[in-house]
Image 1 (cartoon, rainbow over the protein chains, first blue to last red):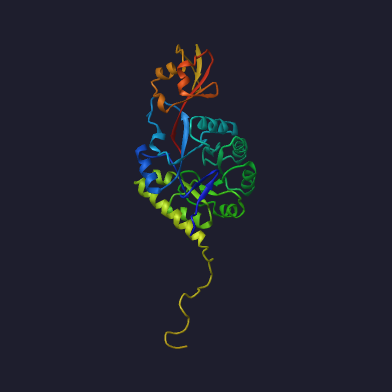
Image 2 (spheres, rainbow over the protein chains, first blue to last red):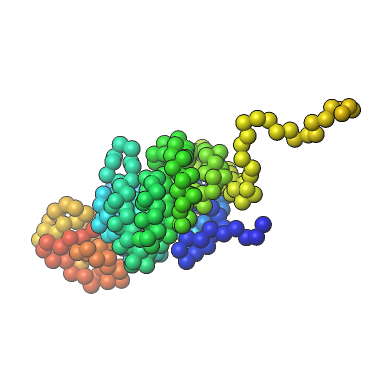
Length: 257
Length: 65
């Protein structure tokens, strides 16, 4: 197999597992997780400082070789997402931005309309735009037209560990998308990550399942291996399912006809 | 004078942005400052004089997915 790289914007990656920095019991668990998983892209969030909270710098726990993917979490409108993206870039975080615009606080479902508006503006400003969206075919095409670098449909609600509840829509998106498809949110187990990759997703983003496990480095490695296995299976072009049995051994009797 | 600091109206006598950061007991190394909706580089904080009604956001990167 020739080198199978993931291209997002102007960068290529050999790992197809994107990770996040949320929910770790300690920031010191992040670097060992990155090392064990080989993940080359990791998300961070931007917030107002709380003088009473821990002032440790999350960025100091991320090696320089790993691409930072700041998210626009907390944004309720396209304008807020644009503002966060510009601040993150000015602060030296690079051009990658995960657009996340959420007004639904119960299920944390993304607002596709505001996300598309922010994507248009930020792509024009030279950002490498990775929008987190509700799986939908129209938005997939519109994000391509808007100049996004990928489409990131959710598998199931953020942090729910419920896997690919949106499976059939994600399959349709993979069929029609001209952009890389990164399944983001809800992937709770390596088998679910492998399933997404077998379907032909270009990458997956996993945060909660790794960060909240008892051993994030080990979980990160398990997810990385599942992503690789799923990707290889997709590239190998596995045969389809059959209703009836199809013998693997010759159907003749042992000694007879 | 009164400024809008991280969304709250506060009374301050700090003259520069750096004074304000220090007065808040914040470590400047991991801090991002937005002054009237524009990010200001850290080397300019000591030279940036705060005026009445300024809008200042002090931000930092945190864990997120």
